[in-house]
Length: 132
Image (tube, rainbow, N blue to C red; front, top):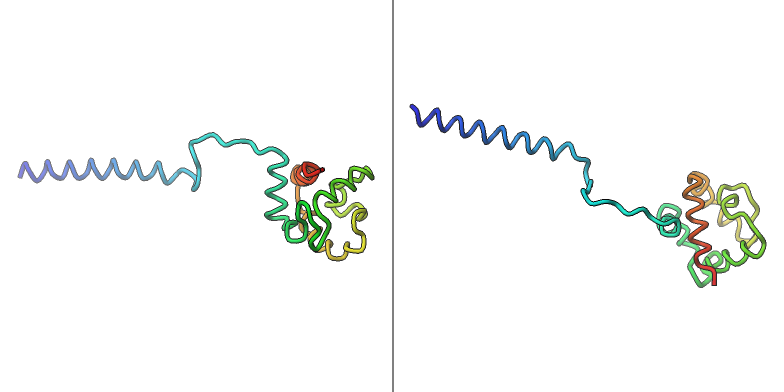
């Protein structure tokens, strides 16, 4: 009988230890890392947005015209004309780079209009980082 009670205690203690250790792990958010995260530069965030949720890369490449003008051309024209790229991406400015392509761009402006000012400034920083 003593062996049976001792065995029950061991099983209960083991179960309690496992329950508490599992509970602690399950409280951690999925994908959370104990490593410190690096802060992204505006250019890096802009590139991520440009290639990701903005879907700008579908029409704009760095050095060549695809559907829309190249990123380098956009940067040069906005710089030369002192244009406001953030206002354009908010849907509050005129197309100064390739106005005849503006109807094609309107679908993506519906996306960029939803971006925060920080995100729009990051896209602007990325575009200007491609000035030649």
